Image (tube, rainbow over all chains, first blue to last red; front, side, top):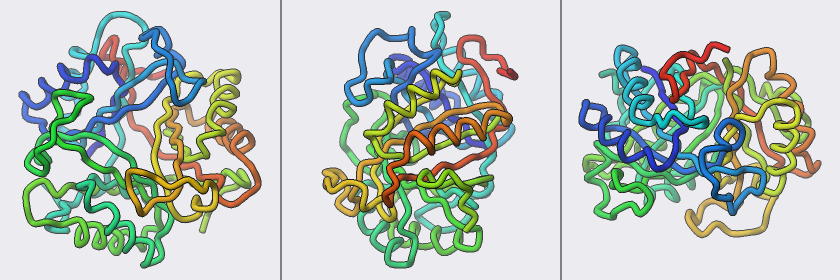
Length: 109
Length: 109
Length: 109
């Protein structure tokens, strides 16, 4: 299994997730973070929590089969795109095992 | 070392963490996120932040020795279980190196 | 590419990130979490969200080239250090691929 972690603009989250769900990838989580760097042009709001950061970002996490990585990356980048700097970045990492809390058993498929 | 990342129901966090600490795994972090999909039946509350998501979820992160993975996964799944859909999921990934901030040195053990 | 994930004291975030940016690593994100264990002495505040946890922690996430890991770990540990227990921990994991949302293309360098 692979973990896809995407840092995107918060106002793009609903559109991205709507399309992920529609394409059959409903198991995802979204959380809030703050960013700097290439993200800095994306939003003029000032973070209240850490003065060094300058942009709210949303983090989408989704674990999927290796065969689905390309499709999910494509959905996130097409739907998350504005064409301006700071649209965000997507990371793909390996996940060795997944388990369901409900059963405690490995979730092979 | 291995990283265990568990997405669980927020009201289960205290019980899960209490047992992890009691069993000798005190170094963990908990953060809040929002989920969709299989988590959708778990809680009728509506997320205020992202309209696409429908359930608050808690994310527990814990880095451990490989030999402790099974025990930690077992604690999380036993204590996090309700038996209903949407109890959550646990991911295990590899961590190549860990360092202590206090010393800047690798934390091999 | 490698992912560096650091759990540090929140009041150290601005100094750490300022130096990371200054040294040429501007693409990072910061989020809030709560911790237990070795972090427990670091702050007497009580978490409102999860009663089991006892310390707010900040999580810094930064993806970098393998050659930059040592420098980034050094900046985080030097700038995040107080010398007291609970200064935090840094994890390094492998990232298989990175993509830019703006283009949908792999970001090799």
